[in-house]
Length: 114
Image 1 (cartoon, rainbow, N blue to C red):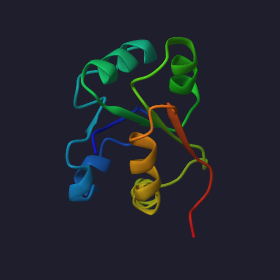
Image 2: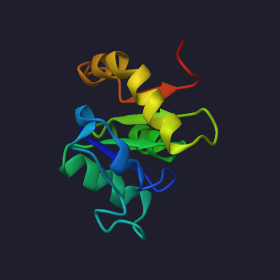
Image 3: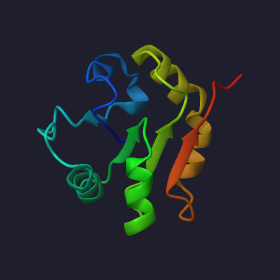
């Protein structure tokens, strides 16, 4: 999967991602640290990334402009980088279903999956 991690997620996540997420990047790696959310959203769209973030900003952009890019919105509150990876792994099959469904632009993770 090809994720673009937003500023509110540590860039260190890239060092710990499993191979199934090996096409992912972080806004820091793409020189987008000072970019607006709209610029990041455009970059994700142009480069076929799914934005992973922890706030509503990108979902709001999708409401205004449509999708792609698709959004994975982690709404669990502040959690560690390893917990974010564990969430992405726990929801992996659901995320694949979401990515393959053209009707939805935002996948919200509200809690840990058991």
